[in-house]
Image (cartoon, rainbow, N blue to C red; front, side):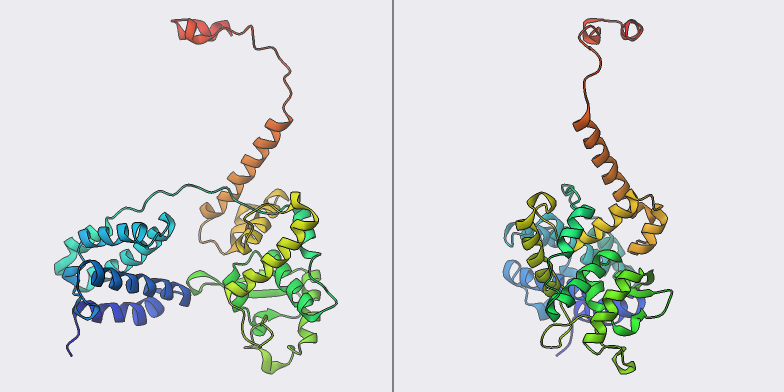
Length: 338
């Protein structure tokens, strides 16, 4: 059976271009793949074109806009998810315009589709007291408790993303001073993160118990479940949520709602910032490409400081005698009367 131009280009995009030329992570490729699976379903259900019949000419701007609308209305996708699907499609059409320049006008029309604005959420993080309370919860009398403590403490201490924790292998840890750990982050970019002696002691105890210090264990995942399988993101999140619930029962004021694995990353960044660590060092620790991304923590910290100042504000002057500028036609005269 003859393949369509869309099928050929999509296969190359997912299997060659993304992993080899872009260096995209496995999770990114899976997310992009899932976008096109949804696009197949849409084209078949709404446009009555079977996946094996879809051609590039079918994927015009109008159809892509309708697809994004279908995701929100029929599939109940959030604006954030809709924007993520659009990013995958844009990337594909950006790739296409160099291979099929004759159709560049239509491809650029697709790439011009705007992302929707999303409501900015308040950054959630734990205070240092909240982190201490959380780390008290694992039962260190059991091997699971000791494993969970080592994993959660490491996730906080190095400000890692949950997938980065899942991907850590024994070989990525430097066991002699200066202690470091090599992290593979977004886009398969690696960074070397320093580790504190106390954290290293916790990890070495865990690795000794699980007999992970032999040379043949270097490719072995650092953390794994009772079936000796590498943890998934969902598995790590489940463990963290269990201890968050326990900590919340002990002191609800220290554990706000909506704390996630990523909140530990936010917590580490905020604590470093509050301790006076320069943003450029925090950027390197977190693996941000630009310090502009890291500046979100400085803005969040400023908001927290302003809120604290407003809560502590006491009225020290009487403003009832101040002239109201709306009653004066001359703004300059009003300013002089202040």
